[in-house]
Amino acid sequence: MAPEAKPRGANPWPLAGILVLVVLLSAFLVLQWRRRDAERVRIKEPVPAPAPHVSVEPEVPPPPPRAAEPAPASRPNPAGEYAAKLEAARKAADEGRWDDAEKLAAEARSLAPEGEGLRELADRISRGRKAEAERAAEERRRREKALAEIREQVEKLRRDDLWEAALQVLEKARTEHPGLAADEEFRHLIDQIASLRREAEQQYERSMAEARRHLEAGAFPAAMAAAERAAAFYPERRSLVLEFQERIRTLSARKNMVRIPSTVCWVGGDSDEYPDEKPLRSVKLPAFLIDRYEVTNEEYYAFMLATRRPPPARSPYWPGGKPLKGRERHPVVYVTYEDAEAYARWAGKRLPTAEEWEVAARGPDRREYPWGNLFAEKENVFHANSLEYWQLHKHLAPGTAPVDATDLPNDPSPFGVYGMAGNVWEWTSTTMRRKVGDREEEFRILKGGSFMTDRRALRCANVYPEDPRLGHPDVGFRCVADIP
Image 1: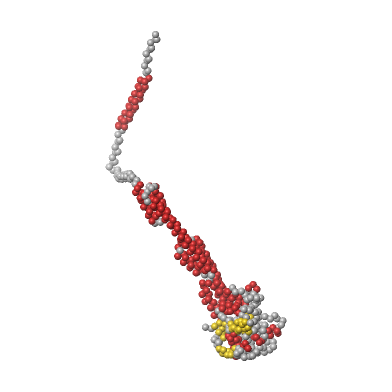
Image 2 (image 1 turned 180 degrees about the horizontal axis):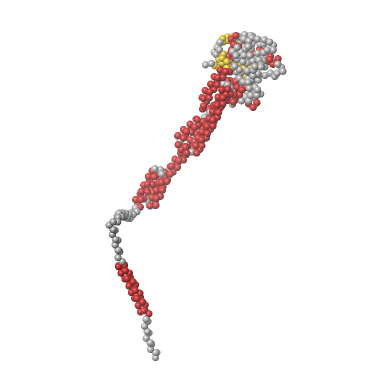
């Protein structure tokens, strides 16, 4: 039989734990109770009243009442905000503000991605942008076309040195096409023409100043040439140049031309030996002016500079296009009739008729030569630079003499016109028909003889028809002018 089990003794630890917890809780409650009693007995002492003799600080007004708290935000209204954005976008589209319209449409789409009217608005913006781009492209094409036409007009005017007209075209274009004002190429064109105009004006002023200096010095051909250069630089001021040149002609006529009065004179001849001179007749021409001397190399050079005309063809007296040094006052030779006529026209004059030339050389007393009826009173005394003179002076080389020479024969006509016999033949505007081969051609009459001809050619009545296309080493000219 098994031994009987002993009863297990009770465990004291749970009871001890409970007791400890009770003690801790009791201590905590006691401490809380004591703290409350201590706060209850702490009484705030009143502030003592000020003494009667002590001033009291002014009473501080109470602080203003606090602003009312903002009302809580109203609840969002997506439908209303969407409608406002859509309307604002439509208004921007109406005004053509496509960027603003697109931005507002995007904001509206963020509120209602499938909102009513968004698709229609997007299409409208797209069409508007496209139409605006097409209009801009069309405007650009029109501007480019207008600019091309303007450039063509301005270039033509520029080639003719018409600066003011070119600037007027540009100013008109800027008014008619406002968009051109922002075009860089157009602005550059304006600046370029304005710069060229200033440069031309400077050249004009310099040339006119030079012309005035020549005029004051009595160098009339040089003054004419300088004035002509001024007009070439600035053609739009030609009217001013023409006024100045008319003044030159007036002063030149007073100094370098001789007045031939309207008086009865004899021209022509009655000798069977010279049938071309017939008939001998009396004439009374209107008064006119004639050059005192034949046109010189220096005068012709001024004409060349002004008109850019080349020197006389085949002439050995123009090295480098300038008169040979020492021959400036010699008569110009190797000139064709056309050369002479062009010079006369430039100088504001004309070539004389054969009758005018003979009247100026012969005078009213029917003389044979400009100085009288005898060619020479003594064998070694001559009145003109002719073949006879050079035959006597064989040690010298024959040639032309200065028009105002004093060391060679150079007697004037009765009216005071020099060189009307000898030195060089002179072109006149009178025509004469001559048979050349099997056809007739129109020649021009030469008068006066030259250093290469004898006394017969020096007679006032002598006529010598010549091919106007030819220039010769002993042919020159002088000019006449009408008296108003």
